[in-house]
Image (cartoon, rainbow over all chains, first blue to last red):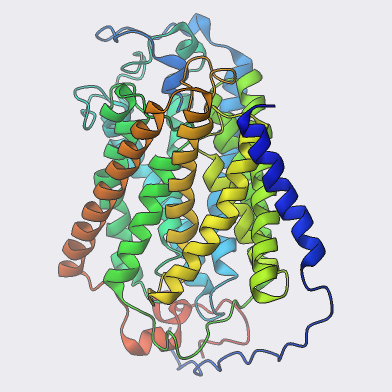
Length: 45
Length: 433
């Protein structure tokens, strides 16, 4: 294996193994309030 | 890009293209690729359009749609000649202005392999690159750029920034090409130039009203994912089409493009999952785009293992660039600098690391294949593209601003670009009357 392949394997392991330790339980997130947009003004044709 | 396949000897003056040597398969692939790349700009419009607020989505779509039309004219009238004409290593002359003399061999494209597609096929393929490059900038200035100022900016930028940089890197006559800079499909020409220019534009136009106080949530994430999917699809034309033929190199470019994109999407998703505790949908889409950007310069020079590393690096580096951009409070609204400027820079540098002549014998090895000098050449190209883009974009914006104010008035910004600039709402719930 050349150096590029070794690095590629390490990168792949980091990403896929990382998923094992990431949070998997449901996270309670407050609904994000979308900023109210200003009401449009009338525009003449 | 294509010059690395095609240039091998000094151009003969006004040598004529031999129409009997046209390869119909190669020509068909290049024309189909041009159509694929064209689709990327509407895809980009959807990618960006979903991330802006509902009152600005038409404004975003219009900037991108108009760019297709504007650059289509500018390219055939003057920019193609500046990019691919002869006459010097800094910028091409006007010999091909108005697409005259298109029966001639393009300067530097003298190898037999260069003469298997008609020059006009090359013109239209390159046009699509010239189209999407200024369109990429629109993401950084979302919600506040006056349309009347955007149009002259695109005209000037296509001529004064894109034309010279494309000449330096893509044309066999260009000074960076002659020094051996590798850029297969536009990591430097397209993504560094647009990403860096996007940062300059964001700084010159200033922050949006309410920036940092109220969050401008994406109004339709589904549009963004659709846009990313269209970009991914069209990018096969961008990269594999840059082989200018339908052979092994095009196939390799196709495979590494897909590989790096997938790896970047997975990496970005993992990093954001770790950072924000949930895997972001928009994050995965942005990660895919970062991977597409980063593999672009390398796509004709690296193998699939190199593509995995490039995709991984794109997912990490571009995500970190966004964190930096947020920390310094720059309102690059849709992170064009982080994804295209930094992603393009990483891709150009990584090309100098992972390029191998086993993939493209017409190019050069990178550092990992015994040629550390290639990294220095890549750094030179990166620095030149950054410098020219910063200065050129700043000057163009300041000049345009003397004639047409770059930024909409406060009332217009609050109302939204759809109504204030175009008099049309995108959705029935946002009415003009």
